[in-house]
Structures are given as C-alpha cells and as structure tokens.
Image (cartoon, rainbow, N blue to C red):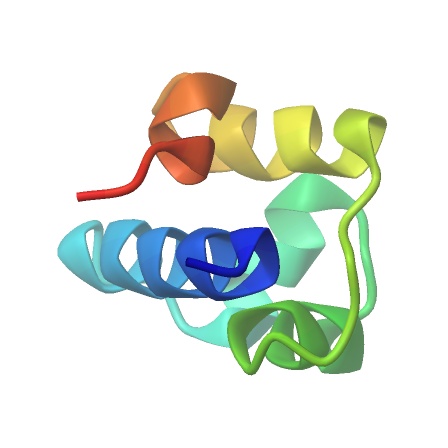
Length: 69
C-alpha cells in the first residue's frame, strides 16, 4: 500500500479515537488545519518532524502512524 494512504488512514483513525477535530489536532501539533486535511486525504507526504508532532499530540508513537494494518 502507498505510505501516504497508510499514514492518512492511521492519522484519521487515531484522531477520531481521541475525539479531536482536525482543527484541535492541528493546534496541538502546531500545523495548519488544511495541512492535516491534506495528510488525511493522502495528498501530501508528511515530514518526519511533523509526523512526530502529530503522534505526540495524539498520544501515540510515530511508528503507529506508519504501520500497515
């Protein structure tokens, strides 16, 4: 599977499981909300530092966002 799609699915699932909107996640990870949207729709690749910030904001490990189900 395309790594962008893997990250998109895992990010969306993790965000929803903690009850965050894209806006809340973006604020906590210090990124723009539209960037979170583009990641979740697999339109952009996410940098490693941003991936770590998103994972931290969600309370998961970065690897959890990269692993295929």
